Length: 533
Image (cartoon, rainbow, N blue to C red; front, side, top):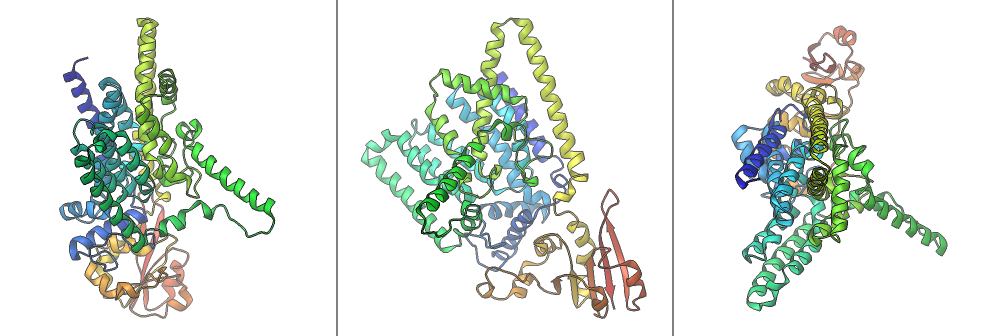
């Protein structure tokens, strides 16, 4: 197969992958989740004021919901918010474009480790695999970080040709750590491995000294940011120590048993990311971390996955760099309380895509030896199954998810705020009751609430309570509605359900009326908006 034909096939794969990641980006998933809304509003605030939502000037960590988000995604979203306004597309584009970039870099990594045919197959699989499509269609910081991380790995592999590639590699590695918390756990291991992998460069002092200074400056600045910017808060809230409690006990047997349970949990979490059931069938219990009805990979890919493992075993598990990355990748996840959490292990998923491409290539070679009829029949069967899977994926993404699965997303705020935002200044209070968490961020986002005005509402950012418990701002109040008492409030707008704002009770109040009942596209009730004069 000529290089021109391979290039054409790769281009078609990129177009296919781009389509799956960009089409109906604003509609599927049907709404932003609270993290997406927070990333988007912080980008909007940076654009308008140069400050985050709390009023901190050009921060290196974003306090957000007291989870202290890494800085790169909000900054990456700023130009898209400037171009397209504050909406779902502008917030999700950095992740979607990262997903397209990942297709390309996986091709380059696989091409360097193996050959271009295997690389083309790997690029094809990662372009259509459920995990990659899903994480590219949502504003996931991990997807942006994965793109930087994979490019960092590629340039580290290429650094033997030119030393400048190693500088580029480390720069991208640090960008990945500034993109998502989990990649910080890989920072030191990959730094040492990249240096070991390119140890010939370090033998010459004239070359190694500037490089080590370059790395040291980044590490020192990074450690300072973690220490001063609440960077350890995320670890404390997601640590496995929340799932495994160590009780003080004078009994040494009991103490040893607790360590046994802790070790068992660590080992179990590690091997969960090698489980075929988790990878090809079940996936995760977190509804927003996978496409409904799909595992991270298609079940049909398991054949190629096994074929790839057989090939590596026959070749004494070489190349070593590839094996090292697979074995290292689960570590950011095993220190958290979740048993199987895809967001933290996208690196291993990317390596599995390459492994599947490797397996598919060698499986085709095996079938070719069995004769043309078996080869043609097998390719036909696999093609039909893959096309069926791809069709099911598209149907789920563009028909099922926006309508049937909207309940797993914070659906309805866009529709509510489209009505409320233009009239919000007509009332002394807007009392908002909702079962969703973090409702204030959706009001800010979908209401295009001016960041400078929000900063003024909050006051000094340093004076705000930690953790934040009061999310009221301006004339917005987030609490439960008790109509028998609240009906006496004047010039107030209420947003609630049909149960806390009953139609009959509202009708009997002389100064109150229902302004609007909001329904979704299926005709299901979402919210009732009532005013008192």
